[in-house]
Amino acid sequence: MEKESSEHSVRAIERALQILDCFDARHVDLGLTEIAQRVKLHKATTHRIVATLMNQGYLDRSPDGQKYRLGLRLASLGSLVTSQMNLRRDSLPYLNQLSERFGETCDLSIFDNGEVLYIEVLRSNHALSIAAAIGQRLPLHSTASGKIFLAFLPPEERAQYLASPLPSFTTRTVTSLELLNRQFEEILEKGYSVDDEEMEVGIRAVSAPVFNQAGKVIAAVSIPSPTSRMSEKRLSEIAAGLLGTAAECSRRQGWNSDK
Image 1 (tube, rainbow, N blue to C red):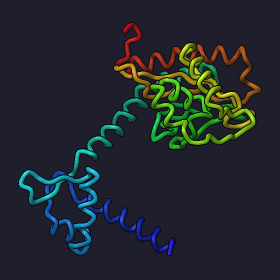
Image 2: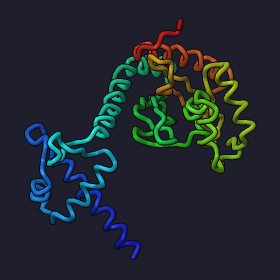
Image 3: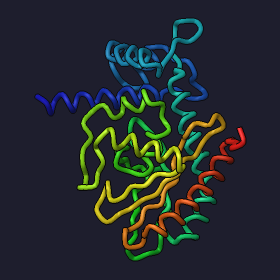
Image 4: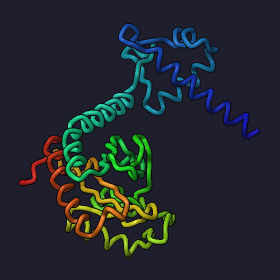
């Protein structure tokens, strides 16, 4: 029964996406019968899916109330995708310079649905190279970039993401709220964060925040490296470089450090 339910759910999603695809520049407004004909579904089935899409903001009524059109929720999602593309494009030259300067992998990530989402990764030329994959998601509390996002959140919002039990990935993963909050205080003071083998044994990472015009953290620039190449001295040098690169990326997003 679970398999049938799963297959039905996937089919319903496919049908909903097909309905959204019915709309284009030539067909801004469509009636229920037109939509049903285009997706080759019964009118009753089409009506149920359309009603669900309307409830979620993906479809809306046309001004005459007789037809449907794409909803503002899609505009919001489209705007988010565009901003991510602009962020990546604007930051790429600085990420390249940083990666070449230290000869290490450099990545750019954003905060998405309570996770770290990597939107750009520049790999180093080392035989032993540490890198996430574009599109990969990792936890907040055990990664350098995740700690950046958590540290700069309002305390009450941060607490929501740390409310559930935090999993350990290595013996060095910090899961104590008291210790994490101390780390967040240090991050806010220093301006950068460190993952000291907390996500994976043998890997250290350093991360710095990218701000937008309003002074909100919208991304994190990070350098992960094997511990064999990330000594304390090297870590400090990389942290200084990251802070400079993150500041350049922030200025491209309209941030003014003098404000």
